[in-house]
Length: 105
Image (cartoon, rainbow, N blue to C red; front, side, top):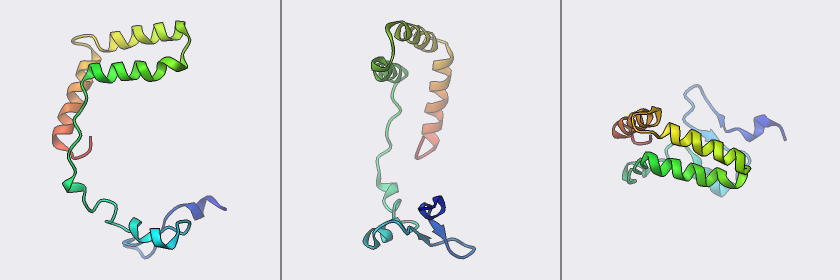
């Protein structure tokens, strides 16, 4: 199977219709343009987690993958990143501003 076959194909220069040749026929109509996002405006916007929640989750997710030494260094860097007035706060504020003006941040 070539890589080209696994990609959706557009027909015509406007490209309003997509074909998904590898999907079963009964599933193809679900993936036509507009169908996947039909109810998007009815979805609740997800909140931006706090910086501390994000940092805690990051540490928890990498902990099983790191040696004690690597984990210690990672925790030090995460603490530095999350310091009051640091780059983490600056980036968190930019993310909050972005989330306020977009459906998907």
